[in-house]
Image (tube, rainbow, N blue to C red; front, side, top):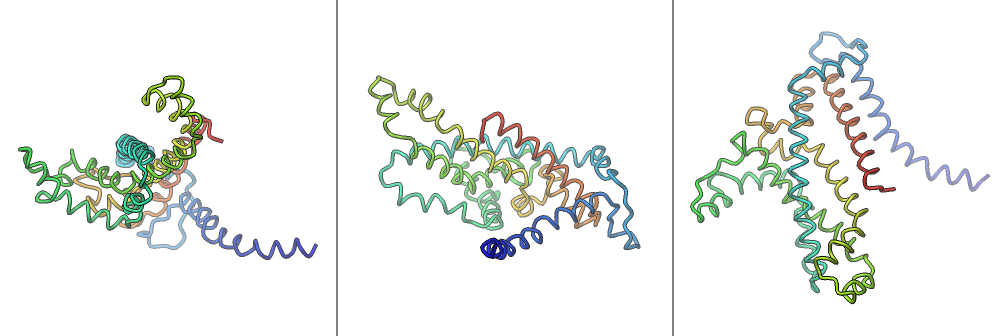
Length: 284
């Protein structure tokens, strides 16, 4: 009995912290989402309106457009980051001195998103480094983040620079954990390096790939920092992802109830996608 009481005493601080930092804000945000919690109203008694905020989101063309832009951001980001991360991981797995290279590769991940955003502004400036190297091949200057058709891909490129090492490190750990006997047996059987990669390494990395992609997709679906620093949702609404639109609604127009409802809609969408994704990859 005394040991159980001691165990409860050790668990209690963590439980209090969990309630204060996670559970209470979640319950409070649900309450806000179900009310007309508009700070512009001349009252502190915010009426209960049920799911009206959620129905309003279903009719809001700007919110629906922000979901589409978020989806585009995620798809383009994964399409760039996964091949780059996998390629670098394969190269490092064959590089004997990789322990000296890994710290340099991990630097972008350790860079604060705000710093990465300002670095992106400098690199993709019309007179910046990227346009300079393009001009060497005869290309004209591209206003990367001030044109609606290039602003989103610019943010994707900045995000890719910062986060492809994350995928690289996870996949590299997975490759190095594969028993070398499997690869040697395939070589003895006459398999080429390409066949070994396709039929031995990739199948054994299935679970690792699933974990790497799910972490990246979750992170990209809640992107905010890069958008805020580089484009501020513009030009127009070209980069107005859901989180940024929710920020505008909640902290520029002070409609906190509607902003909370948008946040919970995104949470529901994420939960559904993650559930089906994990089942598809059979990740336990």
